[in-house]
Image (cartoon, rainbow, N blue to C red; front, top):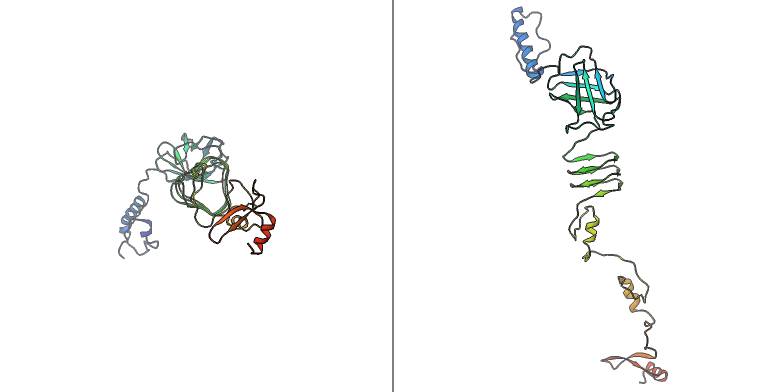
Length: 289
């Protein structure tokens, strides 16, 4: 049979070599396996993944794997569960090789409660520190995110991308929104700071107090609705269509000083507001004058 070839694990044929293959091909098989290992794990200069039980504290994790780690090398990953929830800055010591700091992906120390006891976490050694790749409560996202559960923020948050929240959003800290936030559930914002839009903006954007201050001379479109005042109201209140109709067809003219005994008369062309006696009024009403 022809000797198999390949560069990666998936290229290997699990049934080779067979019992009938000549022993002279053994060296070729060993070289094949070494090639596959080097290519598949390209770039690793030491251990790849170490797992162990953490026996440390809230400020320092201690790992003692069954096979002692020889040394810290770049790209080395640690997979384990934290023994205690952290109280702030945190370190890790593997096989007694020395304490190394644990940092977030942003290069900062974890804050209290970022590393939760009993939750799996994955760290990678960058040559100086172990960086959290997973298992930390630290969240760093810059693209479009979609949250479908209930989202509660107790601290101060800055959103620079587009956020779509399909659940309930509750924010108790200061929130600055520089992107687009879409919330389809119940939203409670106790201290939200948004962008001030230009006057006349007719979109679904969040209106700030500065935007409201710019609406001194608004232009209404559609069918704006207001409260209807009682007939005879003489204030600067907005008059609705219903108020105008009720006022125009009011059975009694508004009482005005000096108008007692005066009536509207017309000669067919002009109308005038004149004083008239009761007898003349009766004659006028009957069409005699």
